[in-house]
Length: 428
Image 1 (tube, helix red, strand yellow):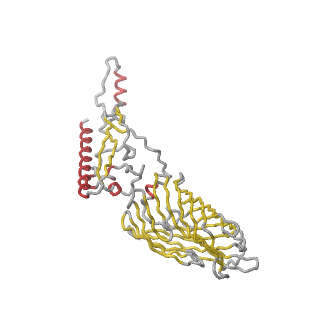
Image 2: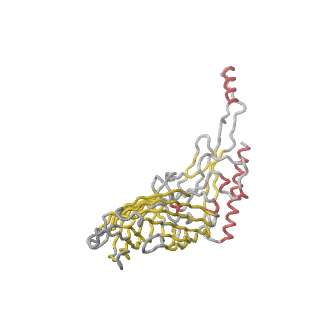
Image 3: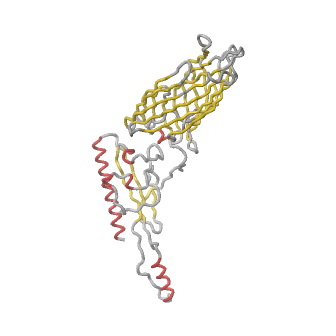
């Protein structure tokens, strides 16, 4: 057991060194240090019985057979385990533990199973110094203490934790909330209802946005949408409008500090009764992101809407994460600002602003083919959760204002009263 004890002592010394150095760094920084405990289970040196014991009444042949089996076996006759615990003091756990931190909850997060991946380079354990069990090393929340005195284990005090079940497919908001702003638009599907009747204007949407999923870097995209219209009765509007879009999107980064999101498309926006040529439009965007640091990104670019009322919008703003309150993300980016607050790993709430509407080519009963443009501004409150398939789903409740309807064949526009909107969204 001497070699096992030496290895165990060496590990304890190395972990103590790590704790001391990290504590000194945090004291030097003088910024809200945080205590983090790391628990890991290790093997001690296996022990073999080199001199098998014999009973007095055991026949010589049986002794020889048993001794040969013991000599040929690769398994140790006895294996000891031990639990090492170290407490780190740090002002930036993510920087200490690297990009691969996966959060169990907002205050404690597990690290990877290789010890060398979470110790600083100058304090790493030499190869072969410690053999880890095949289980994650976690930063647990405190739990009741129990003594493990079962056969084959060292008499060590360990923690009994009730960790939540982890679904590998489900997204974690603690990771999404800290991601850099590198995606301007991504795939989403929705059902939206804006009530209206009489001289008011309302519609029901079944819509998908023609963009890539968040994890994809480049590829072809497409969407087919239907809008059911309601009112106003004074305008002979068609009962339905359609969008058919094909596009290509690419996302990438030029360096650790700069990334981009580019998209171009061609689409037909019409009631499919009017002129097909006049219904063709080319929505596109080109947006760049400068990643200032781990908590801030600067976003800039253009969004080409190809609408009759507004053809182009500038894209600019800041993305801030955990700057004022832990769990708060603020994507203050025009024209689609959004503020998120994480409730837990699978739920968050948010406020978002957006401009909605579009331009469609339609046919009136008199045979004319004007371009109809509808526009409104929306302030949305959403409750979002993660799904087991890796997507996000949300219910949104919105206040809709500055509503207007216009035709390129008629001067002026029609205005409508403010309204409320409810919609369900699935994001990918």
